[in-house]
Length: 224
Image (cartoon, rainbow, N blue to C red):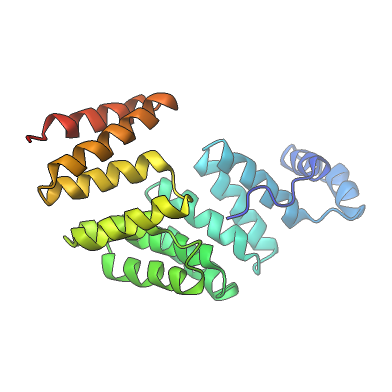
């Protein structure tokens, strides 16, 4: 997913005037050639980057109300809905992005994420595999691994996580954590410990304390 593809501070200013009830000033700014849908999109992306997913969804919905053909807005909205735990809305938004731009690998990644988090693993698998078939370099192999693991197919999960590490698109600490978990489930404790220690080291470095604790809890359960 591209981030902040069309940010323009004048557009943001127009939205602020509009929200503040000063429609005349906003209209004047928009009349200068700044598209209102684009301004709402950019505002929604700013909230997304700030992890204010509720506000992000609010502005992205405003954007697609004015421009219902913006696949990127729907894809971003899908992820925001997923983070809010609103999986039905996330699936619906991702489906719209796929329908509008069926050759975009990232749209299928977002659809796979929404299905995965909703617990619909078969459809998640279909979406992730479609993403991989479109462009194997940008498919979400970490997400695919999580689906396989949830389905009890740890060997397939491990293969997917290894692909994710090779491609370098997913957050490395998360992938090592997931890979270590799958090795642990298979009783391959040496490999599990190695991956979990790598994950912990990465999380310590980037100061993700809750993930450090998660890695420690898993390490404590390993008996060699």
